[in-house]
Length: 303
Image 1: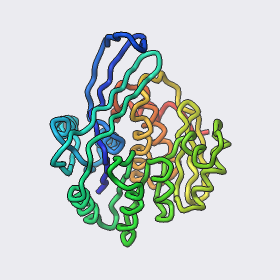
Image 2 (image 1 turned 45 degrees about the horizontal axis):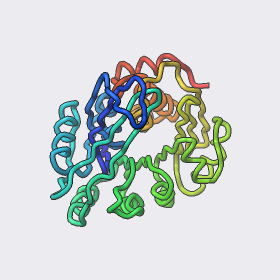
Image 3 (image 1 turned 60 degrees about the vertical axis):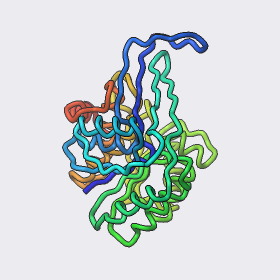
Image 4 (image 1 turned 30 degrees about the horizontal axis):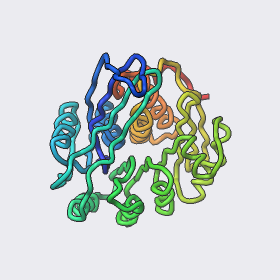
């Protein structure tokens, strides 16, 4: 079974504005409410590809109720941990001349709720897949991802981590199957600016030396790079298409990679599925459907 964890899920409230003017009243021409958070996005793409999975995470208050309802409405399966106080966050996505996001802080997570979720994770078995994605709420320690991986280190569980900075670096000693920084995040780790596919490769290999098995780097319009544990280095430019929504594209890439790997256990196929899924979501107003992903997959070849 595949499990995803979203410690701080949200309602993503998207607003379309023709031109955003700071300090003025701006009126939207469309609104959209969707269950959000990186792990939930991964689960949604896996669902769209017909791959069974269960989403873990914390929900609170009336917004938590809506996250759960909306996620189930689009076919998601969840085992959320409900907090006794607070409300799940609402993240505002303003789509105007440029995309602007305002992400809320989210509720405090108490020890009882955390222990409940950790107990669920401790029930994972050999052969399961776990995706840890997104930021950690301010009330939880930065070591949480690595603590989870340490707890599960005695089992054959394939773990993917999509996180930044300390959250990411802390998990490397536990040899995650997949990590997915983008080129900017990778550059921040090493204090460099990385713009081309060729430039990211040596730094991805440095993360392998620190423990990561496979390093997938998303690069928006530049495409993506995979430095795989078998020595393969795969690079591709971005598939052609009109970008209309970048929210969830990176999460879609993680989901597509996992789906591709489960299907054929071939890195080239997994990489192409990841790139296709990420691009298809970027070309869509919402997270991509299976036909949309397949259309992109068939539209290009790896270079």
